[in-house]
Length: 386
Image (cartoon, rainbow, N blue to C red; front, side, top):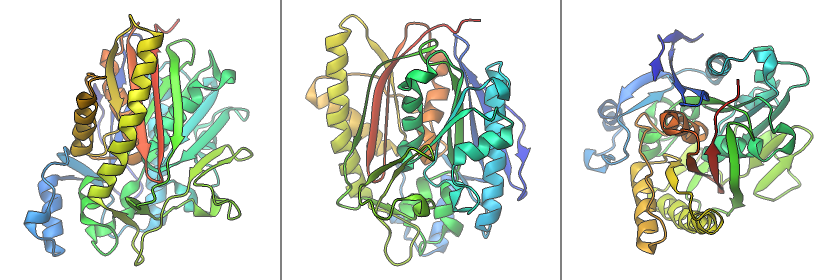
């Protein structure tokens, strides 16, 4: 890991980037931006808001979060995020030895995308333009909460037109726009403690340095409203379509409709219902994938699982439930201690585990998000040519 000097943003906030490289040359970048706070400092702010100390979380698995500075307006937050996106994109391209004009596709996921700016319809398209990519570069965006970046990673791998092409996959997440000023009238206290501004970019060549062996996407309605949030992209949803999962081919968008919070809040998360919903669905989903892999590749062991880091209790609960079934015993490393950056989190974990991604390594990648949507797959790492 190479940690770069903090970089200034338009608001005066800073962004910190780190670069990761696999033994085979595949490279990725992780970034966080905003005010860096320890969990103790977050707790102190919540106590000032009237939250009792015995109701604060001590088991989230996160040591720090990066939070949008107090009283920053949305327009300024969008400017900051777009600058971070350019930084991450450009640094990822450079780390892979490419130029912006070399990139054949930009696939980007975001749970709280900047498309509430009325002149931005497609986050990936806007970023490609800002980065100076070719006019014919293929772009796609997914707005589906925490699974957005994972979905775009697999969406790129499953596109037959991108085999052998240079693809930049990104997760961009200014999620703390939904937990402003640590205000418990805007968001529940648990969300304030776990969500963090974060970003990730990774350069891949589908069919060359990353081989996809299995993939599935599933949509299961969150009928219990485990997580409800303000959708910055609501204007892009088809008002005549009541489907939870929507696809806009013309714009190159995948979107999910999730429950809206009550009482004018921006984000509400029911901790117990969220754990039950995601663990219950993921146990079924991952068990299916594991059995499929064992049947198809009995002599190919999965080295580790790259999982979405929603919180340590959810991660541990998933491992425990799978272990009880006796069908899976795989390492699921906890490598993201700087907050749940929603759409970027699984890609952040993927980058931080690149040091283990040697040629011939089989890796399970799983993601899930509000609404809810689930993505799972098994990839194999191969050497990059030239």
